[in-house]
Amino acid sequence: MKNETGIGMFEKLSGMVKKKKTPEKNIALLVDGPNIIRKEMNLDLSRVKKSLEQYGIIKVCKIYLDQYASDKLIEAMTNQGYEPVITTGDVDVTMAVEAMQQVYNPSIHVIALMTRDIDYRPVLVKAKELGKETIVIGADPGFSVALKNTADHIIMADNL
Image (cartoon, rainbow, N blue to C red):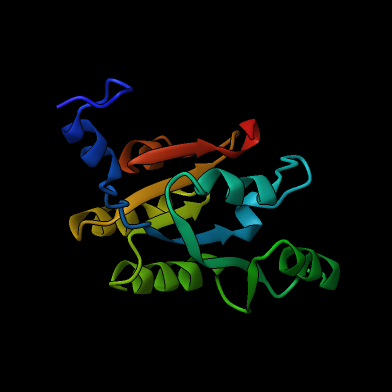
């Protein structure tokens, strides 16, 4: 049956049915500070967060720094919405432990690592085994080819 506008009853009713929204994915973003935050790279970390919005909602946003990080750097990272984690030991170990915690966190769906370092490849492999989506945000020079080939998605931070 058609109404005066030519729209059938079925078409009108089907347009009224709300489609279910796909649930947002929760992202854990972990940044390898000493490997990525370098003057010569000139990366914009606020753009990194913006580019991740297409994949879901950032629920965990941490940057790992060594004990030599300046107060000014720590403040700048905090102002950009990153939670600084200062370590007296190897930054890679501390970040890898946190990454594995997020891999096993049932409320996190996407593991996003900002690094160039192949040391994080086992984290990506385990995350994928457990059904997590993986993203690596990297930059040249020195961006590991193995890391690029392991992640589901690659974001080149130097192109943002």
